[in-house]
Image: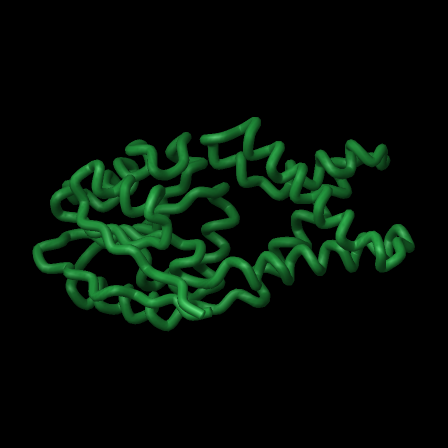
Length: 220
């Protein structure tokens, strides 16, 4: 799958706001590798037969969805740690929080290990920096994980700030997170450009505040 970036007009802009997941890199293969690593650890620890793999992954998904419903729109609604905690609590495991901590750590280590920067994103960020724009990543998720992604992708030299839903207290398309990003850059909405993959969250959310917004497309 390729991410196709549109031509982004930065004329007169002072700030570029950019989404992270499925914009700066591809999320799905990273998640698949991370969850597979967690299953492999579970299989070894519990001597689980291969036939239980799908049940393990479906149960994880169920707990992820439950955390999202309970905590939305806070950044913690995306927490893998809380999803794993729910899984191990439901299974009656001793010290489920300790097991959750280990699985959360493995999940993100495995996720970041296979993550690769999108070429079009590299070019976009380079253009913004060459043009003197302040660049802020605007993203749903807990801050610590998104900070790690930006550093691992090698973008810490071109992204000035990160605005997360954990810090803002609400997910996109809430104006709270976009206003937080603008505040960090010192730019007005009319002086900022947003680039992301979600029509509802990134594009509509930004345009509602008066930003120019451009959607990347996934092909293949």
